[in-house]
Amino acid sequence: MSIIDLEGIYTAYEGGDKPVIRGLSLSVKSGEYLVIGGPNSAGKTTLLESINALVRITHGSATVCGLDLRRYGNEVRRKVGYVIQNFYFDPFTPFTVEEVVMMGRYGKMGLLKRPSRSDREAASEAIRLLGIEDLASKTIGTLSGGQQQKTMIAHNIAKEPEVLMLDEPFSNLDFSAREYLQGVFKSVAKKGTPILLVSHAFDGLPDIRVHLVVMNKGRITYDGICEAGEVESIIRKESGGGLRCSSF
Ligand SMILES: Nc1ncnc2c1ncn2[C@@H]1O[C@H](COP(=O)(O)OP(=O)(O)OP(=O)(O)O)[C@@H](O)[C@H]1O
Image (cartoon, rainbow, N blue to C red; front, top):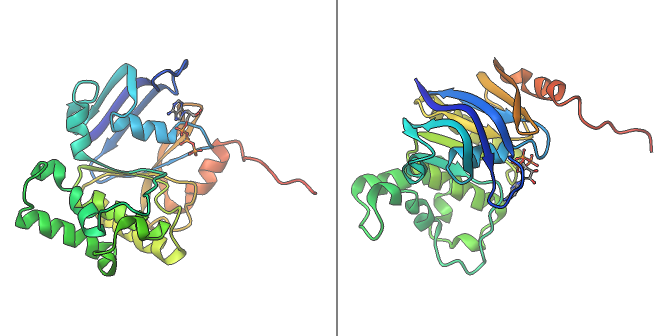
């Protein structure tokens, strides 16, 4: 069953004079591990933001988790986990890691409600899964970039989303943390929740067949199933090989 169904969509940022996504169609099924690659400014982040109803879809049809994205954006956002590419926490941000992870439950429990036992269990399980138990009582603004990244991933896993979207989730992480997290994402997909991963680094992809989409200039230029080990070469080929370093 398709969890995401996009048919010929165009999306534009407020005030933008041209659409960024141009006539894109994509279907993502339950349990798929979707890798989205392509050159800088191809529209990869914009695609994730469109699926999360953060950028306006001007043309085409879009269904996410069975809901019409153009009408039910708020409801879709409650069902989708989205770890954004760049975030910044002021060093004085007054929330602890435990509180930030629990905020992932707000969509289910409602604001200003006491967390139920299942909310507490989901938050502690996410903290355990990310291996950040020792940080639970620290305020988020005092942590390193990698520790903040893990906290935001735990926040989104505690949400128990129907789709988990990750934009460059490995950017601040060391090699072993990247490998470990790939295993976490693989097990999330195995339980049926599709993973949508935007990345430029594919060395630690889990050893499974993945759904690969390559984008360029707001369009999909490749859409197929391949082995994880083939991802980088397909992206290189589709992106025209990229820049080469000539002799200095
Ligand atoms: N908030 C915004 N307002 C207007 N245009 C934007 C905005 N964010 C991105 N764009 C434009 O949309 C295009 C696609 O950007 P996007 O961030 O989606 O690319 P990307 O493929 O994720 O790139 P990268 O690999 O560099 O992160 C770019 O031309 C960018 O300038």
